[in-house]
Length: 229
Image 1 (cartoon, rainbow, N blue to C red):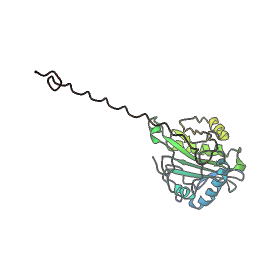
Image 2: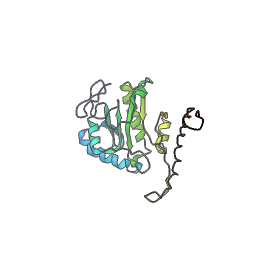
Image 3: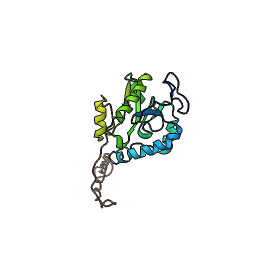
Image 4: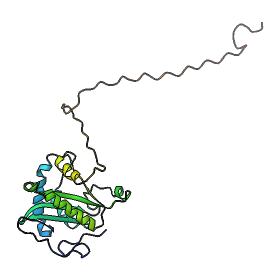
């Protein structure tokens, strides 16, 4: 699988033309690759986007630790894209062409056994003020375009089961449920920290004594009054 090129250098001609970014008129949305100078800005953007998401889901959603986010920039096989309108950051998309990193959630053998070559959508974040204006659609179409250029056969992503907005968005775009973990919970009654006293089980009955051995029979002529006179 082709590795990710350095965002600080022109991309290989086999991946895309060597233009730094797509030009856009005022009010239009443009996409470009993230550069090292954008890391802090993108990090703050993700923190804002996922601040509310993390109040509603069991699994902790990104952003990851800042250190891990910085490390992702140098991961091979990872793309990080910024979507801007008049210089304002309105969307962030991250994808991986292979299972890499310390925070992956993918079992690659699942796809290998099904002859699938997936692109993993690691992140798709839209500015709250721009939701419903086509940002998410543009980001997903851009990732799908890159996936086709790389020879991928599927887009694969993770979404919280109670995120109805996201589920509706993906289902409209023909995403289907695959295999997923199911979170289960049991409500516990409030109690004292230490459990109450508990009766002991009754002692087990004593083990049966072994039967007493019978005495040996006496031989004739040993004692008694039966002797010869």
